[in-house]
Image (cartoon, rainbow, N blue to C red):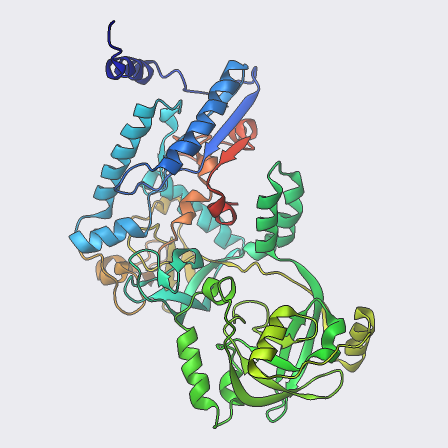
Length: 512
């Protein structure tokens, strides 16, 4: 019996597919379209893992089925190729991140082609190529012009060893996932995208999507819309207002303590001399934890008494003010009222530290709200967990911001004919040591004379996060070789929306 030589058979068909490109697709108004999108891979040195193959096999089956049913199928692939791993390898070895990235992409491409997936390889994109990130930079300029990109001084997760800001999702157990280095909270001037302007639309449009309810719930909780009220407590000695938000104003009579975030701006001024050493020690311990560690994983309640007291605005009772790491300075007002009779978390906290537990009574929400409004001690409000997107990283291997800073404090966003803005060619990819990216070391690149105004200017030395390219790649796939625009509107109208998107559920909120 003749032995089946799978290698020669596979090689024959792969060469045929390579030559004839049977999966290449174009706009065809005579056929219904179907857009199958994969969460495209980050090309690490080890190559594809089982999770990639599992997901990509599923989408390939669907793509082939739809072609057989007469659909014009768009099934593209590309590379999410900016990011920390390539940069860290460059720091260790002195190898340019572009070189290792291209080598890794070649490995991934070879493996995917060997698996026989029916991609339209003519649409292959790479987020770290100037041809792609020219348009990532262009999108940023449009956001800036619309007032949706701005600079702000923010408390961030900073990793001194990596020399960069890291996202909550890049931290595990108080250390960076990349390298396992300690994290600290520190203030830095950062670029931010105003995604909160779309909070309601993001929430309402979930109803339009054919997604599992579990994913919709993840997204809704991430947005975190809450309808309630702001309530103002007053610190006894300084008479400073401490504003909290609650959806249960009716529980105000049962509030027996207030908890501030350790980084709350009032902590320093209200803490008594007797409590100062303990408060400072606790603040330092908290600074090494990510927001995720402080909330989702915070099963053991910790906290420190400030020595100060606040007046409950409803009944006038003086109640103690504590700080605790489960309250975040960047979320809400950075302060919460403790109502241990009505809240399990507050009850645990009160029991651990011996705080009073009193019933709230039977007042209605509306009764309390009217009282607060009449006494000018609070107001109705709607809040969101969603925060604007911190968009800066202190890295080399990322998209440079197309921004010039002038001596008078003004800025200019680069024009279309000045894009792409390429990073400088450097050999030292290590952090600058002062909170700035390695780009800051290239004086010739940073310090320029603006050709359009003739004024001295400094280039922005932060770079964009890895997600800058991966948040719009589905649009570029409809028109990947266009050098006149990010994509063609007619092609967008034909191919979009995406009909099927497959990726790991653990990434759901990040990618939605």
